[in-house]
Amino acid sequence: MSETQVESSPFPPSPVIPATLEGDARLQFQCRKGIACWNACCSNIDISLTPVDIVRLKQRFELSSSEFLSKYTVPYEMEKDSIAGVKLRPVDGGTACRFMTDAGCSVYEDRPTACRYYPVALLSMRRQDEVTDRQYYAIVREDHCLGHKEPRTQTIDEYRAEQGLTVYDELARGWRQLILKKKSSGPTIGKPSKRSLELFFMTCYDIDRFRSFVSSDSFSEIYDLPPDELRAVLEDDLTLMQFGFRFLRQVLFGENTIAVHELNIEQRRQRVAERQQQLEREAAERMAREEDPPDVDL
Ligand code: SF4
Ligand code: SF4
Image 1 (cartoon, rainbow, N blue to C red):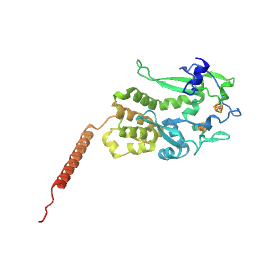
Image 2 (spheres, rainbow, N blue to C red):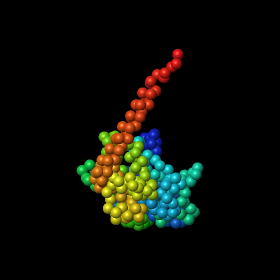
Image 3 (cartoon, rainbow, N blue to C red):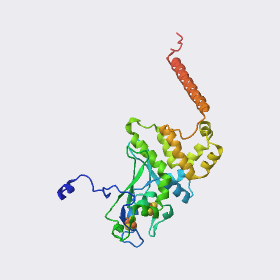
Image 4 (cartoon, helix red, strand yellow):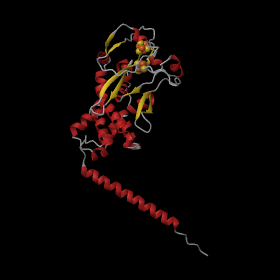
């Protein structure tokens, strides 16, 4: 493409190098204290959080997940009318990360997945002829980041291991699979209901609210979870999170991942149907009363 054509393009140039790489591809990069661009990347953020990131950060700040979400994040739609994601909220009236300090990242041990990956982008994909998803990668090269000029070279897998991403990715895998499945089901399944979108948000991001739901009587009335398993799930955020992904596979995609109390479900259905009939009866009686002309004394 000629230079003139590039200049007249309506789209800004993308910093993502258009090549799909495997983990053994080599990456020349190093971020180090003292580099001239120190903190440039954290001054203008667009960071999506995974459920693992939220658990790690809310534990660090000793906040409930609801408190963490309202204080540090903003929701966004991954696709129109589809499931939601959560992004880090920058400083008020600016673009910098709230956790950035002159000395670097103030939450370094619990920094989000996207920060660990940079300048690598994770591409989670599932080919039509495959049953499981695979991870591929791309390199993001932005002018302000001088790390690409440093002489250190390693494979992407080595870089991921160094950044603690092997563990992070494994923990968030169930969440990525749900997103891939939702995207690949496309419009054939139709617009998801408001209730299912709310369930997805609560289960994936608001883990303490999901815990209250799993410990409620209405949950045990439907789901048949052995007491030991229920205890283990409720005791630990990350175990609860994995259970949440399993729960969503059942609720959103009809997979049989958790045993249910069939009899209770049937009784519940009947109660809902009876309640519905009662409401309809009451509405019909009300309408009939309103249409009845009042007696008028002449
Ligand atoms: S969390 Fe840390 S590494 Fe990530 S953008 Fe904020 S300051 Fe930078
Ligand atoms: S080298 Fe890149 S990642 Fe490191 S501080 Fe500079 S801009 Fe940020």
